[in-house]
Length: 438
Image (cartoon, rainbow, N blue to C red):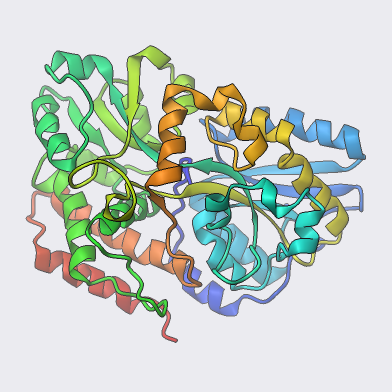
């Protein structure tokens, strides 16, 4: 999901999921479905530097679709802090859009509601076929063994973005490859109101993305083979503690970052307040914040030791945005035409170039624009060392419960209180108790 793709679902998520029925688009007076067969409503996720930036990017593309098909698209760009709950509320009320973007980590959770159109062979055939899409992107489009609940739209992975001048001023020759190196470099930089690494401690989804990756590096998955929560394993506890320790013990993250929400860490990086940030395909957003390409470099996210690769050297989640259709839309044919348009080779090239992401459509990836040094790191990460978040029905509750637990632990670290292994395990146990009982 990143952009970034910071979705802070509230505690109502659990109760909404329990109540969801298989309903989709219908007549609505609140941004809902179409007024006529020649109108579609589309909820887009916030991918650019702002809501207004997304409107400027998408509106001309939607106009192209209208000119080609005669179908008008009513656009609403929704911030990540609201998107999941808006989708769940639409599913329960029937007053939703026809087509929408979802964070790919939510695919299995939203699939379990029954509200989304399954992408079987027939539906894939209407947009050019399933084999047009990269396999790893399809792996985050729904539960294993089921037809996908959505179609990949933008593919992303995390990378380490670093400020070249701040590194040079600190006498550091290049980006860190391991977490120990990051901490050592960070201690050289974190002084005189400058900090090494930016974080968004009040952003549950950013928290979950990073502790999931660290969990994989410590051999933890957060769910067992039967899909049951396993938040208190030694590996899961070690992952969360390592992440929070970057602020509390290692002191390479500013205490104020415990209160940071969406995009604040990237803004600090662009203003030379921090030397590093872990982000999903940040190029376009950094440019929007006034940072030129020669001011920053990009490297793989650090690992515990060695180099990124299969197995324990996972260094990113498989991030991205999927496009879904509400099953009960009044205009299924128009919705499928719109998905076909948005996933066409031409639109995939245009939109992913603008957003700095990678097309999940194979043919579009052949464009030289997606082989820049920065995007090469992202592509190699997706190909070699990224893993999808658990594709289980309770994934969205997992993001909320564990992401919030990490937020609370960051608050403790920011206040100068020690965050012990026992305290981390206790907080993760509380998170696990919040998960729905089967």
